Length: 284
Image: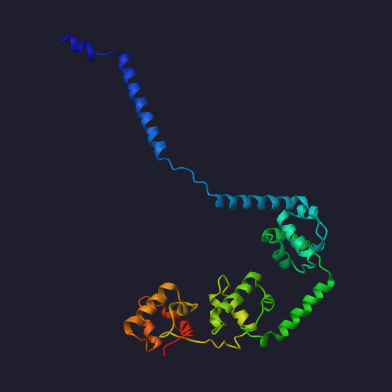
């Protein structure tokens, strides 16, 4: 009995030592578990570049606020040093130099941005300093007045990017997108197809149509759904791969589509686009 008591009896100092050892083990185990479950940082190069570009842009803007108080100048004759002071990057000024080397001139702040690809924030800071020859302003005014006087006879399907740029609030990239979508459709058949142009402000659509109404709807050749191949039906700008596949399945099931109205039987068919789809299809 004395033998067992000697092995299970400890002094107060020994008990404190054992307790400290247990607490140390628990802390070590918890720390290991936390480290094993910690999410690793994932380096995203694209996001890092975006953040870096934003930082660079803010630095350039800060430089612009304090560094330059320039006189007005013609941007066609920018030098490397002046471009640097204005906050342009070497790539941006090189694009302008290449443009000028080919004998071309920029005649507006929009054209300057188109050539150099400077950001909107930089352009807004330096554009008030631009000074173009008087004959440029007179020519632009004359061209603008000429376009306005004849704009009613142009029509939406014949309008150019330059004609659209006469509209207040119109952006160059949106004007190009309107013409690109017109080409994809084969011409605007309905006035409200303008609302389908990506990123075009809804409030600009009535303004565009008032200036350039739909005077000449296109004559779009229709594809016979009963004889067309999968690829020919898919070329319809309002049909995607899944819906085209369902149309082909319906044709196989019925052997023949007697009326385009039969397409409405298809599950999840976009009824709101039926009139637009029918512009390009027929059932004969």
